[in-house]
Image 1 (tube, rainbow, N blue to C red):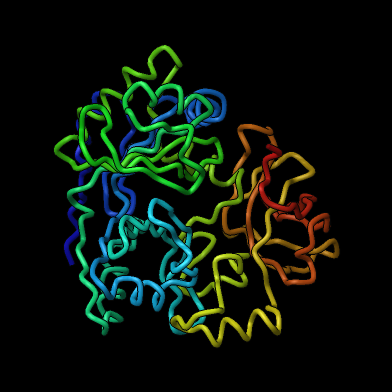
Image 2: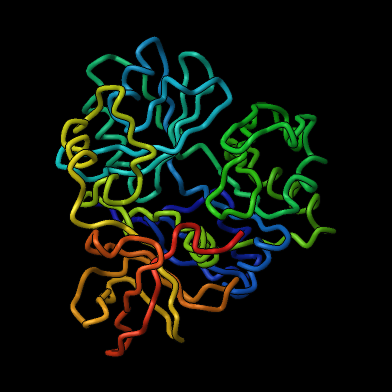
Length: 364
């Protein structure tokens, strides 16, 4: 198997900006430019730009496109209007999740699937394997750059770069138009930070031009480049799942609190088993929690009840830069999953009290 680390189109730009580069999902990626805390707060309060060009993009086209998407995804893509995006997942045949993804409806017979970088090859093979209906598939991951411009000042900065009225693009909707002088750019009101903003899909040939234009447009608004470290703390404050941590091949969407993207009004892979779970209930559930004492929870730390008996495990944890307290996600026995329930996290052999909290963990 090839172990070559891939590089995004703007790899050299990130190195020139002083980014600490690390291997992530098979790519050389910027983890931080200054500090995670500073970058996190920049996005929450002002404006930041992430290069997330490592993500995968597949086009599904032709008269059979929707039939295939309905079969392989848990959400109901027939409800999508042109210009609308949807969060969904690819269920596997044993109750788990192949990946979580975004589905964009570009035209009546053309969709864009956006998948996690670490799963590009796996997802592509999975979709091909289930494409008995003859939909046209095209992997455009290596030709596509993706910039997430996030924060409360995003619209103000980006509006100077496009004739498209950004105020009119609702959350989880998108427009295709001219952006920074480049035609046919996907401008999507999505992002994994909870801070508002847009994701910009652009061919690699125009990536540098678009990145530089965004920087120029945001310079008076305090724009900064943001690395993967802050992306992780931002998504965790919102309680958004990270594939490989909070969801994987062994976690069902029902256990993971993703019942809202699992629609049983259609046939899809493993529908019946998941419908049974929904009806009968599951023995464990993914919850968000907030520490009541000083400490930092980390992945794989035990979650215990107030008698010290293990009831689960942390899947993601951090010190929230916005709140200054330990927060996390983890699976617990279902009877402990109700918001307000007192639990404890074992941090360095000490059981620190925590409370289960309804998502998001950040009060916004």
